[in-house]
Every structure is written in C-alpha cells, then in structure tokens.
Length: 136
Image (cartoon, rainbow, N blue to C red):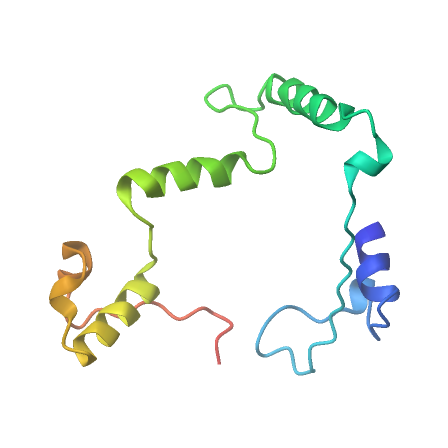
C-alpha cells in the first residue's frame, strides 16, 4: 500500500487500487500510472558506517533460513540476477524465440546472418513465435 500511496496517490493518478486498469494493450484507457523515486544515503542515517555491516548480516541471516523446498536455497533480491550475470558471462545471453527470430530477420535483411550464433541461424525458416495473448 505504501508504494501505491507514494507512486499513485501522491503523484495524482486518477485511478488507484482496484480501479487501476490491467497492464495490457487492450485495456481501453490511456495509461495513468505514476512514479515515485526516493534516494536515501545510508551514511546520513548511520554516519558510523554500520549500514553495510548490518545489511550484510541481515542478508546472511535471510539466506540461512530453512527453504520451503529442500532442493532450493533461500534467495534475497539480487541473488537471481547475479546468478544470471554469471551464467551469461559463461554461456551468453539467453534470448526468447521472438527476439531470436527478429534478430535473424534483421541480420538477413542486412546480409550479415552468418555472424549470428549457430543456434539462431538453425531455427526453422518458417518458425514464428507465439503472440502474447494480450497483443493486438
């Protein structure tokens, strides 16, 4: 609720809460979403420099909680993104089918498709990606 109060109510949006239309192209009304940006300098609140130490301790405690699924570990914000960056550094960036097909079409139109990764070059010629159900 606090995020919506800061982003929608405070910024003057006309529709808030359950009145906000769905985030779809066929919503039938102009977008009236607001934003709120807050910058906090932790050194101003904790000038002794204890913030980073306290944050590290908190995140460590959270990661050590028992997971809901014994096969997985507890993650905190940023953990999946760091893992994805590491994976992309080793194996390259993952692209979905729609992006891969668009990239191949662009490369073909520019006569440089031989520079594409083999996986994209070898996609079936008539392949099409499914459209998002809310695409007009």
